[in-house]
Structures are given as C-alpha cells and as structure tokens.
Length: 88
Image (cartoon, rainbow, N blue to C red; front, side):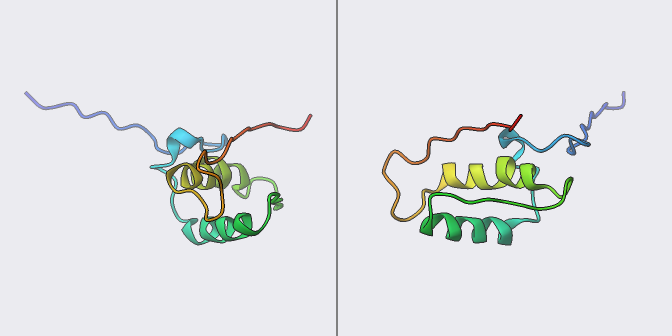
C-alpha cells in the first residue's frame, strides 16, 4: 500500500510571515544582521520600503525571532518586550 505524504505550502501568499514561520523564512540574513547592528546603537528603527517588499515578514519572521534567540549587547537581562501594532 503506498504511503500518502502530505506537503503544506511553506509560503503564506499575500500575507506576511509570522514569528512562528521563522524556520521557513530565509534569504534576509544579511539584512537582519544589519538591523541588529543598528538596534544596538539606538532604541528606534524605522524600516521603510515599497509595499509588498517583505518589511513585515523580515521583522516578524526574521528580526523578532533573532532578538528572542540572542540578546543584543548592552541590553538588559530581561531582553526585549515585543509589541506589534498596525497604524490605523
């Protein structure tokens, strides 16, 4: 009897990747490193780019999991308190 294997599509379509999708999110490692460097020097970081370019995915599935896994130099032992919000 053949074994039925189910594959799920790893891409969220038009929705952004979420933090729980971090294992599926790749290709932006150099950007995440750069964002971490900038955050180690300032408390505010604005990420501005064209609509649909992956800003939300990079933040939610790239930067946030990176900050949760490894704290930045000079930050408190408690780490980051992450709050997501959308203007509007």
